[in-house]
Image (cartoon, rainbow, N blue to C red; front, side, top):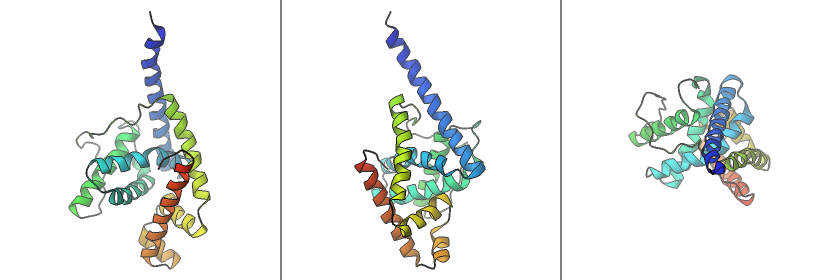
Length: 204
């Protein structure tokens, strides 16, 4: 009997369960105490997947990137509404992504989370190997390092946008800047972070 072949499916299941718990715990931590490290981990793991999901639904890369930013801000703001007893983190998060896409197509910016909606036609993002699990831990560290490399003005708007959940308009008012400047700084920061992660072998 080939024991290694038998244990491989069990290992994959164990890895998926560990990742599912980790992401669920992250959302709970964000909701309860605005845990920035937990958000960095969620962002590092899901941002690229959300963007790919949107592009796979026919959205352009530019729009997909913009919507991904909005979706991750919503995750930060709405994490307290996440209930691990009702849905996995991936289901909750991709429901936000699906609804944001629908709202965009309808021409409004309203975001709702309806877990009783039809099942999402996305792959289970929590079935990766243990190697991927370790890679994602390292990716969260690389993301934090990439953010630290940003110029002050870009790091400032990223912090206000992602970690404080402020809208572009609120940031513009707070910093006394044109809203176009705020959007430009966030866009440049995202590009810089992506380049930094890619040079380190990661993705965003």
